[in-house]
Length: 467
Ligand SMILES: Cc1cc2nc3c(=O)[nH]c(=O)nc-3n(C[C@H](O)[C@H](O)[C@H](O)COP(=O)(O)OP(=O)(O)OC[C@H]3O[C@@H](n4cnc5c(N)ncnc54)[C@H](O)[C@@H]3O)c2cc1C
Image 1 (spheres, helix red, strand yellow):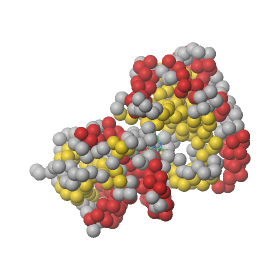
Image 2 (cartoon, protein in one colour; image 1 turned 120 degrees about the vertical axis):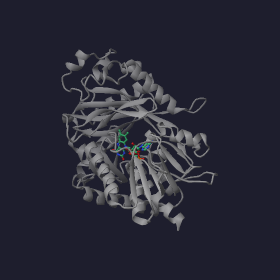
Image 3 (cartoon, protein in one colour; image 1 turned 90 degrees about the vertical axis):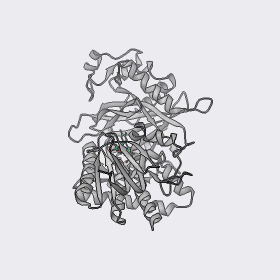
Image 4 (cartoon, protein in one colour; image 1 turned 90 degrees about the horizontal axis):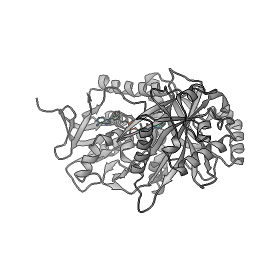
């Protein structure tokens, strides 16, 4: 049987890909095929939040954090357009929540505004700035997966112009206008292919092959990486006010090195998880598992690492940091009590078991008690230690010897590629194919909000192009 052919194929069933399919299905009567694993696979969202504009600006002049996509719109005088996209993303999320019956709530809690402001003022006095985003909170890892899986099932069962193919794509051929699945099956497209594979897709070679064929060019983006540790401490030591902000970001400057140190994620009653990023990078991260609430709070603490010349390959550096740590942990991440780090000794199984105030949520089958200072450079460890000490002024008890540290925590910024941020279309001289790159895969977008917005932009631009 010859391979089936569609107007558009979408590769990847995360937020960016599914938004694009739902938008195309809505707007344009074209035939669409979406290809992805049967179930949204990884616990890739620590918890699901959609961060939009900052509501409380703890630091004057500080805009929404991490918004490179937003920056493109702002720099080109297209602020209103971007705000409309954000509003639409919010409405979509409300509709989906209603459709799937998954509850959401909004942060920060407006009834607690005064308490929040008091917390911010106090933190500022200790040299810590607080960034609070206006957030829609959908839930933990289970709700997120549930939402995506139900949207995927909706496409499969209720949308007559959408076909769903379960599987992974191994190769995309723009010349032949087809995607080749790992099992050898081919799916053809007539008009466009939407690549929405997240960062995993890059690891799986689609990206590299399109690059080798001259379709994808890497562009010079910001070359920094964040490295640090995940901390686990009793939930009871964290000020209640932090829960009214969903995920406050606390930032400070380290004393000895003058580097930026900040918290990353915040999971009350959370857990630590090992996340496989592909490309040989495995890291720890916090997650919120609604079905297994712990007595601990989990949060990351990271410092910026940046190089100029002659070496500026932060990806390679991050990969080596991760590999070093896993090597010392016998293939597993390392866990260490803060008190053991202070004494310059490794943690042992016995010391972890005897840890008075907090027991790890990852079992010793998943992590190895050890000494992170052998794996991380002095500068990174110094910054982290200094950061923990300073944060203790607002989270009293965080610098207790029983606080647990896990490594590696590495956050890499994916390479930015030749995508037009206003259409999500690949800018290429080759004319045989229309390729759109969405979400995490294009290096401009970061987080669920951007992923959803990129899906809307791509669908809209494709539809306009077709008219
Ligand atoms: C631990 C962690 C916590 C996070 N927490 C948050 C958070 O709280 N809030 C937030 O806004 N963002 C968070 N993020 C970021 C957020 O998850 C991503 O920005 C978002 O998921 C990007 O969506 P996407 O559609 O581009 O990619 P993804 O969500 O990664 O989806 C890609 C899909 O494509 C599939 N795929 C991959 N390769 C192929 C292939 N070859 N063929 C077919 N299908 C393929 C994958 O299996 C996956 O289903 C977190 C990320 C991590 C890793």
